[in-house]
Image 1 (tube, rainbow, N blue to C red):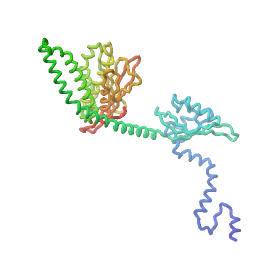
Image 2 (cartoon, helix red, strand yellow):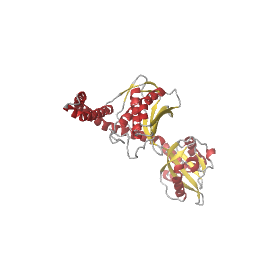
Image 3 (tube, helix red, strand yellow):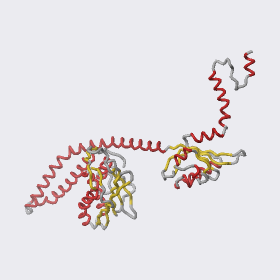
Image 4 (cartoon, helix red, strand yellow):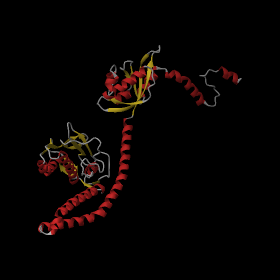
Length: 413
C-alpha cells in the first residue's frame, strides 16, 4: 500500500512519514534550481555580485554591458562605456593588434583559450587581466556578441615579481659572500708585502734622485714603475675591501645643492684640463636628503670620474643635475657626451668594465651603497651619443632617524 501511494506522488511532494526531511527539501530545491537559473533576476543578481569582470560586447566590438566589478576595476561607469569601442577605450595601443585577432577568432567560432592582456583604466593605470571569452548567439544561431569573463591578476603578478627579486637577491648574496671571503684572503696575503715593496721602491727612488750620478740612478725608471704599479694594486685592494665588507651608513641631513657644488669643485680643474665643460643644474635650491654623505660622495665621484674618462681629452660636456622624483624620492643624474656604453656590457656586474685597465669594482660598490639607502641606480643611452646615470634615493633614507643601515651584499638595480 505504501509502495502504491509512493508511486502516485509527484516529485514535488514530500511523504509525511519521511525520516529525512532535509533530503526531501533538497530534492525540492534541486527541482526548482533550473527554473531559478532561467529567471532574468537571477542573471542580473549574478552580474551584480560576481567578484569577476564581466563584459558583453556586440559583434563589432562595442561595449554593451559591464558589471559593477568591472566598473570598480576600470574606473568607468557602465553608462560611460556603453557603445564605446572596447579596444580604443580599454586596451593599450601596443596590445590592440593582438586583441583584434583574438576578437576575430572568437566571432568566427574558433577556440580562444585563456589569455592574459592589459586593461587601461580611467586613470591611465594598467591592470593585468586573465580573460576567458566566448561567442554569444541569438535564437537563430547568428552571432549576437561576445562575453568576456576576466580576473584581475595584477597583485598576483606583482607578488611573483617581488618573490623573484627576493630569490635573486638571495642567490647573489650567497655568491658574493664567497667573493667577500676571497677578497679578505687577498688583503691578508698580499696587503703587507705590497706595503713593504712600496716603501722599498720609494727609498730607491729617493736615493736615485739625491745621487743621480751614482750607479743607483740606473734603477730610477724601474723604481718609479714599481711605485706606480704598487699604487694601482693598493687601490685595487681598497676597492675589493669596500666591496666585500659590510659597511655601515651614518645617515644625516644633507644640503643637496651644497653637496653637489663640492663634487663640482673637486672635478672642475680635472675637467678643464681635458676641455670638458662640467656644470651643475639644480632647479630647487632647497633640496635636502637624509643619506651617508661620505658614501654618497663616493658614488658621485665614481660617476663623474667615469664620465671624464669616457670623454677622454675632449671636447665634451658633463652635467650633474638633481630634482624631485615621484614616490618621495630624489633623482641625481650625471650625463656625459662620451661614446656611450655598448649594449652587451653589464656595467654593474662585478669585474665588468668598459675601460681596458678598469677593475670593474667601482660601479659594483656604488650600487651597493645606493641600494643600502633604499634607492636604485641605472643608466640610459643618449642620442646621438653619450650616457646618463641616474641615482634615485628616498628623501628620508632607508633607516629610522638616528639608526645605522648596513650595506646589503647585493641586489639587482
